[in-house]
Image 1 (cartoon, rainbow, N blue to C red):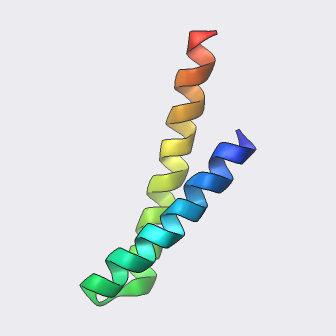
Image 2 (cartoon, rainbow, N blue to C red; image 1 turned 60 degrees about the vertical axis):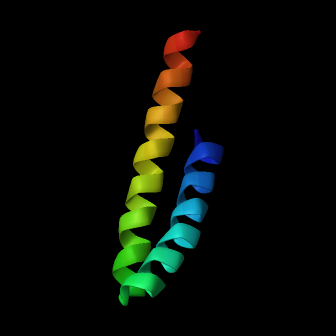
Length: 52
C-alpha cells in the first residue's frame, strides 16, 4: 500500500504542476492532484486485495 501511495502522490505532484501551470494556480492544482492520487492508490489497493 505504501508504494502505491507514494507513486500516487508523486504522479499527483507532476500532474498538478502541469495542470496548475496551465490554469494559472500551481499550488491548488498540485493539492487537488495529490488528493486524487492518494484516493486512486487507496482504490487500487482495495481492488487488488479483493481479488485475492
